Amino acid sequence: GTYKILSWVHSRIVEYEKAGLGGAAHMACADAHLCISQNNEKNILALDSNAEIYVIGNPVVMQKFVEEPEREHVLCYVGRLQEIKRVDIILEALYRAEHKWHLKILGDGESADELKKIVSYLHQEEQVEFLGWLENPWAYCKDASALVAASEYEGFQLSAAEALSMGMTVISTPVEGVIDYVQPGVNGYFFKQEDAIGLAQILDMIYEGKLSLCDRNVCRNSVKKFSVENYFSNVSSILEKICGSSD
Image (cartoon, rainbow, N blue to C red; front, top):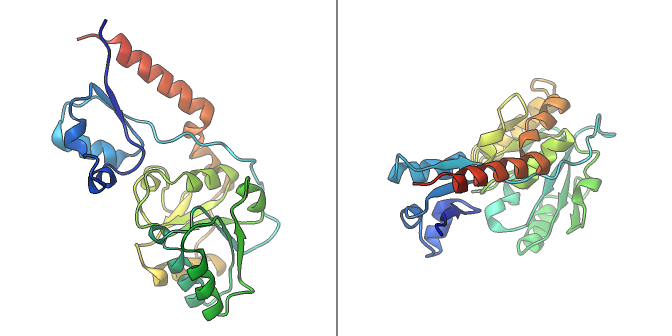
C-alpha cells in the first residue's frame, strides 16, 4: 500500500539546522507539513511554493479562568531558567521601572543561581520571588495580571498561550509562535529583544493607566482554537485529509 510522509518539527526550523539535524531543504521530500508557527511555514514555502502546509500551533491546556486577580501589579514568568529565556532582561526592566511591580518566577534551570545573584545585587529580594519548579505552576499565578517573557527565540511559547487562557495579558518579545496569537493592545504588548528600557516603559505605562491591561475574556478567547479539544480534532481532520488524498 501507499503511505504518506509528513514533517512536523517542534521548534524553529533554523534550530534543527544549527544542531546539524537538517533544515527546510531536508524536509522537501515530505508529502505535507504540520507547522507550529507561521514562520516555519514561510521557511518551507521559500523552498517550495507549492508545498502542502498546515499551521497548527501546539495544544494548549486551558487553565482555570481568573475573572479578576486578587492583587495588583503582580507579574509572573513561567518556564525554564536558561540563557535564551533572558530573564535577566526582565529583572533589569523591573529595576529601571519607576513603579514597583512584584515578579513571581516559576521554573528552574542552569541560570537560576546567576539570576538570584542579580536579584541580590539589585536589592530586589522584596520584589522578586523564586518559586522553583512546580507541578502546577498556574495555581500559583492566580494573582498575576500579566505574564512577562523576554526570550531570544521560541517555537510556540506554550507558557504565553496558557497564561492567556487564564485571562492574563502577555508582555513579550516578538518571537516566533507568539506573534501568531498575540496582538498588541488586544491581548498583550511587545518589546524588542534585549530592550529592558522598552519593557520598563510598558510596565510604567500600565501602572500609570496610560496603557491598559487587556480584557481578560478576550485574552482567553484568543487561544481557544489551540485548546486540547480543538487542536486534536483539527489535527485529526488534517491527517484524514492528507491520507485520504491520493496522487
